[in-house]
Length: 503
Ligand SMILES: [Cu+2]
Image (cartoon, rainbow, N blue to C red; front, side, top):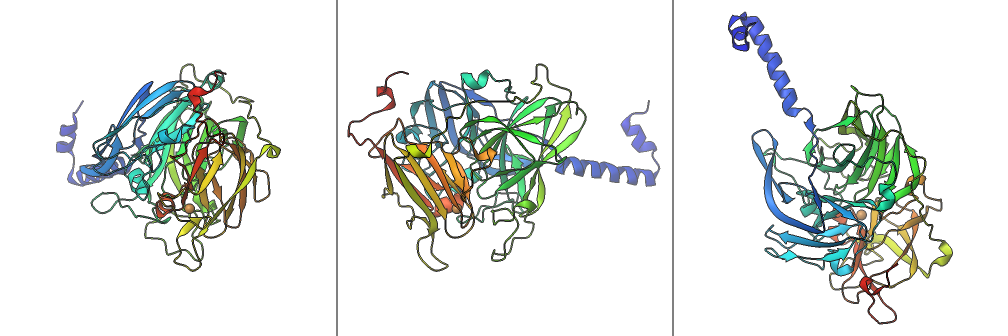
């Protein structure tokens, strides 16, 4: 048999040119083609060591792109936590400017929460310790320094948190990490001519035109022909997605921000706003050999969502924008079933104890608006732009509250509250759809809409360190669309979790 070099030598010139053309186009395809999805390594406790540092990564052949990362060149390890476990975090800041790290969604004391007041100076290590009180779900961690959150997250400082508990472990659900339980951190980047990341400070304009999942460009996940669980996290600064499968088959949402739903919800589309998470099951049984795509059908986002169809009064979209178009997020290649994989979708999941409206101690209004009249007024909540030295709200420990979010002006805002998980009572006067009927910490509120949610402020009081509530469009947050609230103990005795009796 002739070897490759003999073929080239013996080939007529016209065929050689044709072959070179084909070879080049194949090479060009592979250079711009699909890349195996990066699966961040896991980190198990009880001690977790994270180091934020500047780095670089070769996303394009022969070019180093400047990044930030936790323990690596971009993003960070997936932290595996267990409910009830006491954990010790060591978070080192090597990025040459102050930052913080927030455990998004977790119920921890305000001093351990990593909000804008828990600054980690360059060259120092922040060491919060806490007990994991949350149920099994998907959280994430990212910086939260006032006015710098957007850039720090965008350049790579984000990671996933998976909480496990015995209730979830007993369900028939896929949970082999990276095999049939896949982290899917969805972000949009934009590169300049030098293949460096373009970042725009402030507003809702930080939207890229290059999709990355777990920091992988043109990502491709190889999945068994069985039930697969995707842990979807919208880690983008300012882009809402309308997720769906390219074959228009249904998928099954099993968990929202704060935990599992009561039963799987069958969906063809799932809207995911910045900060939100969703766990979904995709049943690929019998489909070995097929390729399908997790898409964002952003042409169906027609209500002013960032990343959706541009509205009449929007500034012109930049050249190459993907806003309002349908695009690929993650290609899924189906191979033979994984050994011992789960088959079938469970009928029921967990009991979500309803918080009745009648148990509320008070209603707290949250008005999403500008700080004054006129087009130049900054975005504000209840008329106030965030100030590091102001406490905007005070909540009594143990109280149940209804928060009434009114979006008065501008586009849709994903409203996020620290410390607690909430249940949506109604959205525009209507009960929430099934996918929003579980525990949530982010809710997208449309202009002219009122969303009411109910929540309880338990376990942690601190008269000094506040928690935050804010818009999770990171540009809006950095512009000051954020407020601070204290949870105080009205009896003025300091109750901490460790003082409470064991139950
Ligand atoms: Cu906003």
